Image (cartoon, rainbow, N blue to C red):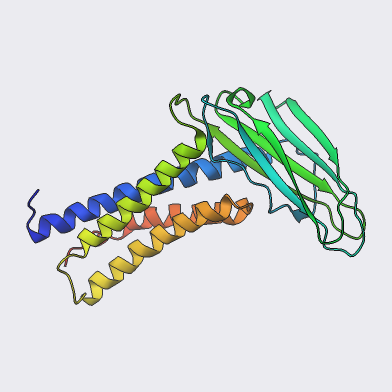
Length: 245
């Protein structure tokens, strides 16, 4: 396809926007599912955060998936923590509760996995998980939550779907910004400002997804709120967001 310079820049901007939409969709799913998981057995209150809890973003009917968590012993003596996992079983009132008693040597780390599938979802939409680790004194008890969205795609697994969407979103943004800046060097002040805003938004969304899926859902949710506010301001408050000069 042959574009003159102006059309190439505009096409790049469109690709960038599509990439933002893809990544923002993933972040929205992550934030929504995690917030829903907060309501899972609200009687369980713990002080610390179990940052080692890992859950997939999506799950499909194609195959079961797993959640995992790691428990380590930072002390110089043997500890025997109790690990409890709560996983929905089609309704919020019916939970699959599994308790495991560990014996961990000094400096050792043990991993626990639990299998989940689409049949565990609430309203055929979300599988909600809460993990609690009761540690012996003086180690504080910790817990964390996560949610997994069910997507009815028979020919992909949840991990494959996540990888495809993340790769697609990043590629659209990179290709889009490359075309968007073609022929614009040296950048004028206003164009550079707009380019920095676009880069910051893309990085914010990507990092929020990464952080949320690495056990820090509160930070990820804050990133989601900041990205949402930023998009609203850019769409309705900054008429120069797509500036080409």
